[in-house]
Length: 557
Image 1: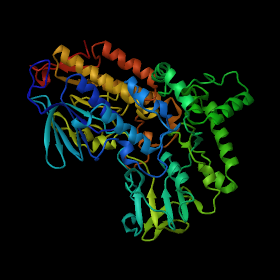
Image 2: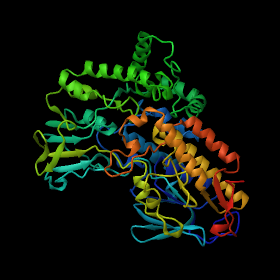
Image 3: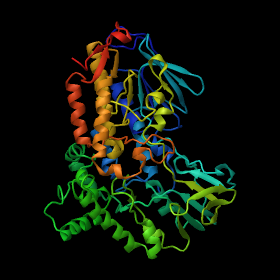
Image 4: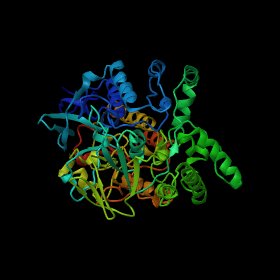
């Protein structure tokens, strides 16, 4: 079929291939299909859901409030769906995405249990050839990744890792039928957001739970609760305002901050407003002051950090355990700020829960019967890796993407990802990355970032069809400038003081560079809108009759 509605293009199987059927892939499919494109989504799992399909571990729950952790593009969707809690659990979010897929009749364009193993660009026809694990190939004009920022699990390569004779599991690949912890000695490695959720849920269910902690975290109470009917009526009555404030905020959340900065406030004043927001819980605490202020003002951040440390010390009975749980090596917010849904710190007051500081006594090896540190051996029946992901780039590089002249994305990103706006990368035409590296993505409420990217991509494709283009890529100059700008912003904020997965520091050998755009979703949206208004400034566009070398440049006009 001739897939270029604007005219002359090589025949392809579909107009667009989208990889992934989570929040991003479902909305991308819906948008492009409404524009008349023939779209096919390939999903590795056997159901929609993305992150919420794979992460089924005990305690898995969203850290954005439910009424904003959903789609905003269709008023009927948020009128018809009603969340049960302030912070939804994994099964409820998965059910929501399944409901959306059915409500919008999306499944007919989704191929499940299909793993993409490579994608190669054909410069002579300006098309992508996408290959599956079973050998199927499909040609497409647009190749769009919706693989998520946190979707390739990372499991540390400890000595003896494969010698363990008990059951082991990674939280991001949890068995669908669950795991029985009764009468078991369970060990969990990791105390990031996932580990905190898991530890809170499993403490008391196992005969004994041993927590191996490398880096303590600042966990703020979520204050979860059921959403009553009157609260839902209030939300529905104000949804237009809620969405507008979320889109125009730094973090994609509609929360007002008590003060722009701490300037002019006494120590007692600061503690008073912090205590008020602590009782409200969740990311409302981060919004006590303008989040950008907390992440750039070291003195204010230290006041906030010490406030949380004192709360931890109050919560944990044993002073030595409390100090082990108190974070001192990074500022609050420099790593992903986790939420405490179920008395995480109180879990360590239990006799059947132990804390091992593997920063002080590192793990030497995994043995047949457990874990040996430099200080002791811990007998385990079940070992759980809550060790996170090869974040931001891992899932994209796993697709084995090859652009013109045989250059792969992995080669291009050898020293860290390089994109323009997190949407495209120079040398890889017609490849769009939804919430790609150097976009706000994980520094925001993800559905807000996802919707902005999906809508920008759909509008861009519509523009190309309207103006007779069939090829687009970021210019090298605009990419260089964007990477430099992202790095400069990060270095001027407190993110640079933490070894985090934001920087790839959790994966040995990975180039450490700050990957999300830290300038705020509100500023980013304005930049993207200006680029589109200026006929996609910074991108090079080509017409069907032009060869790769004859692409019409809109970047340097």
